[in-house]
Length: 266
Image (cartoon, rainbow, N blue to C red; front, side, top):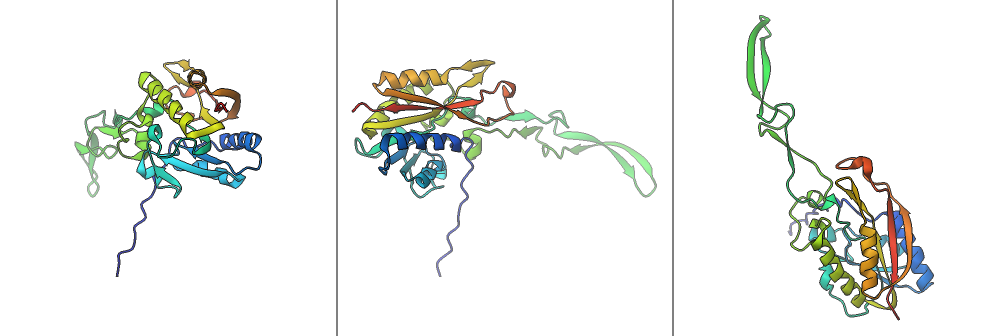
């Protein structure tokens, strides 16, 4: 008798598609393609929420670099977004939410000193003989909060920590805002233009973020980067989003997202 297959749970994704942004993208697809069942690619598919566009009549294909997240949907393949395995002009549109270059790209194993024991791993406890009610004095005991290590794992809502393992080499999920992030996504825009038919759409969901108390104009950079590759801007749709209200700079969160809608020249 063969062994039963063991289903491995898919790790959570810290930045799955905002469903309001997906609905807004579907409206743009409808305005461009009407009733035509356009084929839509998300090359940064994560756990595959883009496939929810099927309920609006669109055909979807997903690509994801991390196998553990790609496994969340049967129509998401493990693929490199910079070299997607498809012919030129294979898709009517790309609808995607790339990484935003925010602190969610942090990928070190963050730890913090345990507060109850002050980082020593032990705590002082009072010993009492309960039978004779005699105070036996103080003694050192292993700190229950940290198990004696002196540090506590700091739970963070990042790609690496949500995945539960190191990110694949070359993943944009490990790229904070900077030269590597910008270089990677300029290369990706070239690949997106290759994959989409003339006249098709590229819809990018994006948001600014706060770094050291200053708002980083990531949206503005994307507008310039897409235009520099000859894509034609059609719209910038504001999308309400409920951002996290904890972590670094939580009091300065940028609340809005946008869908940048571009068209490939015909």
